[in-house]
Image (tube, rainbow over all chains, first blue to last red; front, side, top):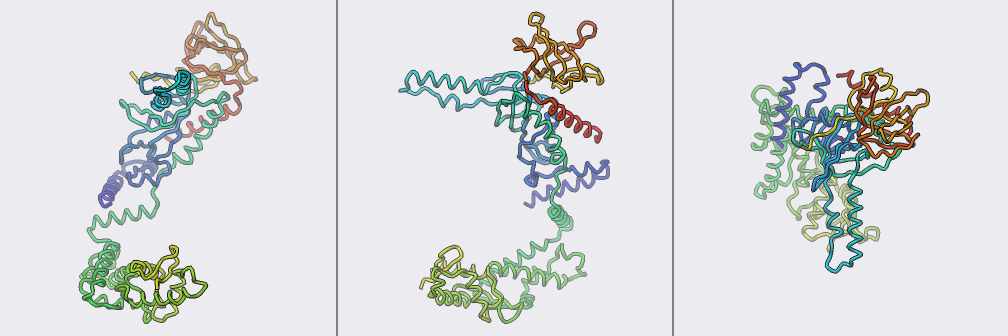
Length: 393
Length: 125
């Protein structure tokens, strides 16, 4: 991911420098977008219905391979309707020249191999079967072999071949359209399509642009991102709390600040708090926020849960012998004897019951689910559905 | 070579071609009603599909023989504009297609829409 972002950062640099020199706003709107974001464009990998004149003028997309650029839309495939103005048969394909009134493009229409296989002559085939097979084969070929003046509909991939663009067809059919309805419809539809889709610039969502700017800033200043620090702290705390030798059963948020390793991570220079940072040490706001977010992730992961005693007090879950798991088990054993909960207790019900206990009044649903799955791993409970649980004993 | 593609046939109206309001040269595609066909000379005469004006155009059908002509039918011709004796316009047709039953009003509307779009785009650039 990092390498990809680097690529984009370079692009931004280039475009920033080029920006003032190029005249007009339209140029900056149609900046090429790096390949990893192409999936955000609705035009990407769709069969673009375009004028042949425009297709012929497409150029390779500067920031990615395989696609062609119309404005800054990546175009892989096209959908064209036009007159057949040239036919050339090769052994494995037909080369059709298609004219839609704006340009002529070559379409490679590959002959189907299935046609031959389908009516292959078997050993024990009767003579009539062979003849019928040949007739069908011939008809099939005729249906795919067109004449000048037919209106054909071609869909396919764009390819560069000997410095010219051509369409390698994945679908091609003759349109049975004596009144030109489809053609007229296409002529009317294209200007609308262009106005509403293809001529609109492909812009990335604003949050993405913002994120990329921050990423670029991080690269320039060499500072660490907040998210990265939280990751580090989360990993450290997870292993630290799981370690039985440390023997931490519960902790207050402020207590964590007394651990050196935690402080080292939390007070490293961070991009998000760069402007507020005084000379020397990191601001307390940064440390608190990073620790808090790391602990919230621990809570979401089910490693800790909020204690009932104080707001910022957390209980550490060590194993299935912890008081949380035992309490859940007791609740299940008691409630599942009731007729209402014969089929198992919903985990939300378990959470409601836990909230009735002073010690567990702040336990979150995630914690309960994780505790239940832990109990299931120890064969203490069975899941009746994905959300209902029954105790074993 | 694989690349001897013919030039594209610009879609024009018969009236535009005959009145010479815009300089039309090269390859064109027209929609017209067949008036008469001479299979010996291999020439056809076509007129407007619209009723309000009456232009006649000579079509050279040598390249599209056998031409299944039926007087009164509507055809689309694709070919090159050429000038014969007395500077008479001849269309050397290379592709022909019978389009009886075409909705001429819709066809003209669609053609106008397409032209408007291209004109607008050329203005912007």
